Length: 69
Image (cartoon, rainbow, N blue to C red; front, side):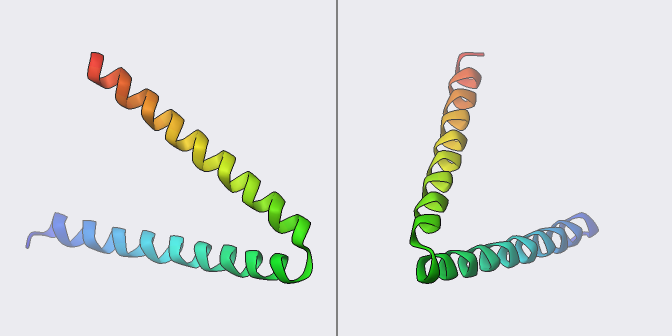
């Protein structure tokens, strides 16, 4: 393994640790909202659906654009 590979692995590990922490916090927020405020939970699910759908739509458009060029 060369130096670039090691640095890439460490950078990915740091990034994965950061995102895992954020996902854990989000899961706790979802848990408390479903237990104490169900309408807020439904709103969070709607927002999550919109964000994921937008991400996939943009990804689909980018893939279509790159196939034609």
